[in-house]
Length: 574
Image (cartoon, rainbow, N blue to C red; front, side, top):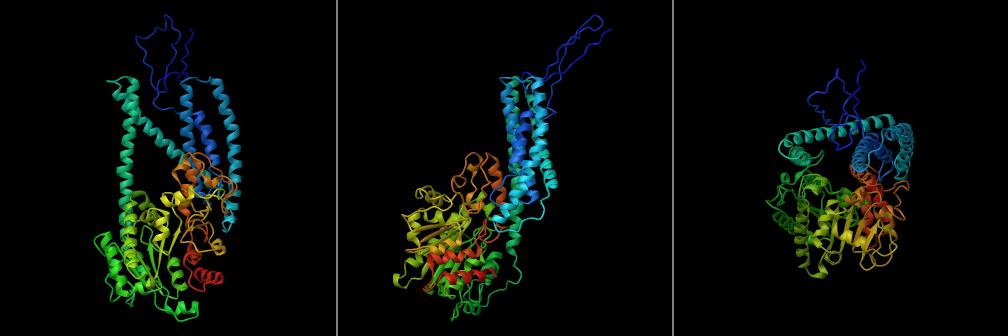
């Protein structure tokens, strides 16, 4: 007796259906009363189009970006981009199968070609990736790595890809389960659409309510604990010229960790005199922490009262500094100004958060805008009420998120130019409205990383030392933006749009091997943000002693020379 053979063929109608051709029947093998085919919930194998595109994305993830990546981060980036490629390829394959279904033979040929080519391509791009990373490190003045652990990079990338693929299939399984339940009361196609929507909404709610909220709460508590502490070697100042001092209106305990660092770590008169070679005076530093007053406006008013108490408006320079998210102000920014003016300065700042800038940027930018606006406006109004002949120089500084708050305070470039004697902004973000407008309206032929704007006294510098060659009247506003700073060049539009900084002539720190690829370049630049501060001075988001060139450009003291700039930078770097 001849046995029938039941062969399961690929799905050829809807993706969730499977059909089995009826076996040959005979009197000895009668047909059952009903045959109910089992539906395949999730395809066990990989999609050929998904696998192919994931391999392409995987290889391209090894191309260089703005900053070098350590091996473990490269593994995460490679696995993530491969998963994105697989999702795009699978979706494209599903759309193609709606119109045309390739034969089994064509699919087998495609798999054989992929199995033959993909290992070779991965090996080639691993080798190229090592060379690209070494070249990039040399370009940025970093020591080249002696070895690049390609094996562990591949292992982490496969683990990342596997976890993402497993997560996606579990979500698909959940959508199928919801569709099976809804399919009892609504048409099948509507049930699957509803299942997809329900699972998507539940996943978003779980991620937003459980994951992100808990992460934010944890970060908030951790930052609050850190803010309540005091750095090693930081002691309450004994001078009345500092907030938290004996006669201060601001309590030492209310300043926060970064505020205590700010007021306690100023250079001494002896140190300043040692640099200038002439008698100096004690610099003034004033600060208000989150606990110094009940709200932002009261903290700003408290700082102005502190300025009146210490005689800040009688100094040669008054500088308003908008800090980063944690309240931190770079010591090179403050020390450089105090050394340049022999201590005849009054530096003021105010805390608006104790969270890192990247969290503040994503969660609530309104705080930095409110704080910058309140303090700059309060100091400016008090300064503007003085006779013009006896006013000190009014300088304003912002770094990273602080540049955003400063720009939003003034609103236009013209108001920035007219609102102070000099404004120095380092590492502006993509969200800065004035920076974006000036860049878009730059002079024809000037690159986006070094734009020219001749109609206003505004200067851009992708290297600090290029400010020493300026001629003519000094600029009123200076933007310092390293061509390798991901904080400056990151933008959500990198997902779908080739940026101008990768067109035509490139910045001196951008590798010629870097190219824009949809989706991939976005994630590469996003990961660059993690190590933006782990590079040498003048690279990435590290400006440090380069601030001396910025201050010298907008507000150099009488008799200041380029040699003094070089000497002060060497002192700060040491």
